Image (tube, rainbow over all chains, first blue to last red; front, side, top):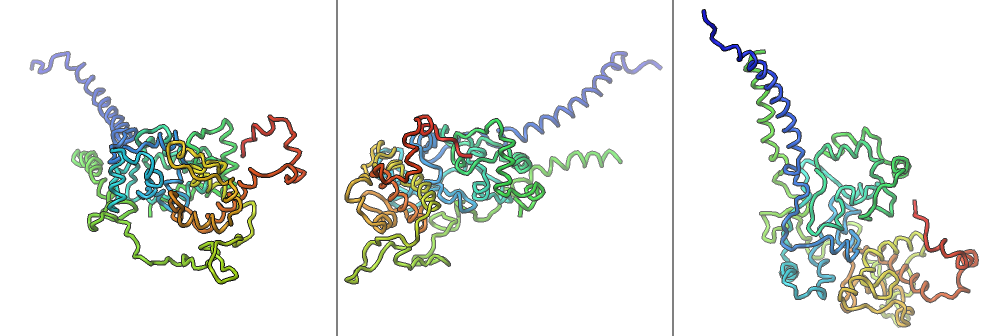
Length: 219
Length: 205
C-alpha cells in the first residue's frame, strides 16, 4: 500500500500539536488581559457630561476642598453628588451668564436634577462605603487619582475586585495621617511601610481575615 | 471522560460570562440613581415638608438657633456660646471654616478668598469694628440663614459645627488684633525665635 501522506506532514503534525498548545495558552492569556483592560473597566475614559464640569478648575485652580461639594463623604456610604444649590452658592454671581452653565441654572429654576453620567460604577452587589475609608485613613486620591488634574472626570483604577482586595490585603500601603486624607497631591513617603503599620494600629484597622471576608463588601 | 464532557467543561465558562450584567445592574433604587417611576426622576425621595428625623428636632433656641431672650422679653442673637469652647472645638471649627468659609472669606477672614478673586462680591472683613463686636449668636444666625449675597450653610454645617466655626471666627478676630502683651509668656518667646523655626512648621505625623 502506498503512503497516503507525504513525508512533510510529519513536520506539519508536530507543528500543529505545539501550535494548538500555543493557541490555547495564547488565548487564555489574551482573555486574561482583555478582562482587565481599560476597554472592559472603562478606566481612563473621560465621560461626556451635561455640563462640562472641571475638577481641575474647581479643585486644582480654585482650591476647593472635596467636602465643600461632597458633603456626606465623612458620614455616609455615598460621598454625595452636590445638589444644584451648592453650584449656585458661587454661580449666582460667577459665570452667571455663561451658556455653559445654562443646564445648572435651568435645574435651579425648575428643581429638576441634572442627569450626570456616572463615572465610578460599582456592581450592585458591592456595598462600598466612603465614610469608613475616609475615617480609617484612606485618602481620596488613592482610589480617585489626581482629580485636581482632570478637566473631565475619569476613573483611574480598574475598580475590579482584585484591585479592592489588593488594598484590603495590604492596607498599610495606603494609610495616611488624618490631615492628609483630602490632599489630592499626597504621595507616600519613603518609609510608608513603617508609618502605615503605625497608622493601622492607631486607626484600629481590622484584622486581615475581616478585611478579606466576603461579607465585608458583599451582603 | 468522554470528549463530550471535555467540551461541556470548555464551553461552560464562556456561557457564564454573558450572565454578569444581570447581577451588576439590579433593578433597585440606590443613592443618586435615576428612577423611572417618579416624575422628577429622583430615587432619593424628598422628605415631606415638616418631617423631623429622630434626634433632629432642634428646638433649643440657644443651641439650635443661636437666640436668647433679653430683659424686655425679645428674642435676640445669643451673646454667649451654649457650651465652653475647648481646643478640640476650635480645631474642628478651623477645619470646617477652611472647607466651607475660606473660599470667600479667605483663610484669615479678610474677605479675599479665591471665589472673591474670581469675581464674587467681597464679603466684609471679620476685622472691622462692627463684626469684631458682634455676638457669637449673630455669626450663628448668618451661617444658619445666610446674609446678603451669602447663602445659608445650614445644609453643610450641623448646629454643633456652626458653633465650632463661630468659635474659630472669634479666634481669627483675636489673632488679627492681639498685642504682644496678650500673648502668654511661654509662647511669646517663640516670636523672637529664629525665622526658620516658624517659617517651616514641622509636618504633622
